[in-house]
Length: 431
Image (cartoon, rainbow, N blue to C red; front, side):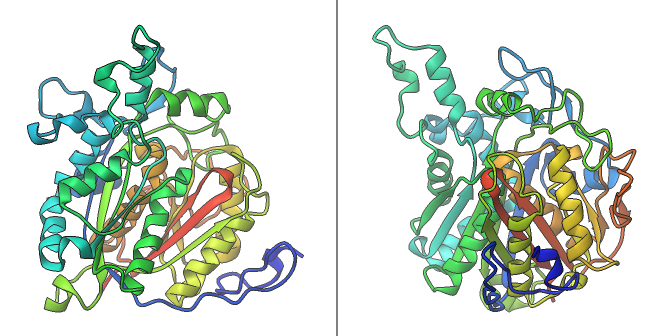
């Protein structure tokens, strides 16, 4: 029996593993306030630049000029990282951390006054009562790539590139923790494309268990040769800007981004003073382990994650106004996700995929697309599906092609990663 036959579309039902036993759905959670959030991506630095790009709808993908040899594809590069001069560099006090990924993280931290908001939370709660959960897939691997290209005479890394802080997947998290003065739990989540969606689930658990009083959730991934050529070796990269859900789609476009969110209990901080902020209503995680780079053919893990997120939010699929789809523009991913949209959401739910605008920002995708959902709720906008020109014959009528203005109460974000590592987040507009 397939999961699609167990419940009517839109019903937050218990997930059913392959063995047939029904698991109890998770209990609803107390909503978590998103007190501040920021972004830096190919659309620009800051949320206003991102919102303007979403309403404009034109792709920010451009021919790749990164790396040598240079892969012939289109990428969503952050222009500030390649601009001449020192504007993109780290402050002198942080120069020992210098790498493309940490510079990108810095751009995300200083955008939208996030740095001030996070440091204020540390001052208010105490450094040991603030945690950091950061998602990334490649971290500072660009430093390690450079070290291998310039090996010393003894065959080891050259001294200038030997710093152990920068040759580890935990580098960006350590950098951010130092910048913000965080002394609570610090964790790096690296589950491919779902990495920085899962950090929201980590943050909610920490807050619910009383381990901390605030959490900085983040996602950072920068362009690197390992990522570009790694995806190319799997035959997943398009030579042209990606076209999610288009019948001519032929692969993904890689992007880079940094984004952060400050999460706290709804009764704490600015919310207690009556500030209107969006909320994390629910989260769901699942791993179907079907294939390294292809989704489960029936979307089994994705559906587990979605049903868990809806159950924690106390919502049915028909209660969700907008869905930011994972929408990578690979043939199987879009096909399976379109079927999930059709069977699990209501007829009035709108959906779109935004990777045609920003590129697939890898481990930062979950955070960037969570920020897009938060902007959609705050500003009353429904992003379009950039690159969609000729929908599949079986295309879903709820798939939005051109951006529009429309008030929204709830939004969901899909993040489906390699190895069947899936995450879904549900957000609400806030009271």
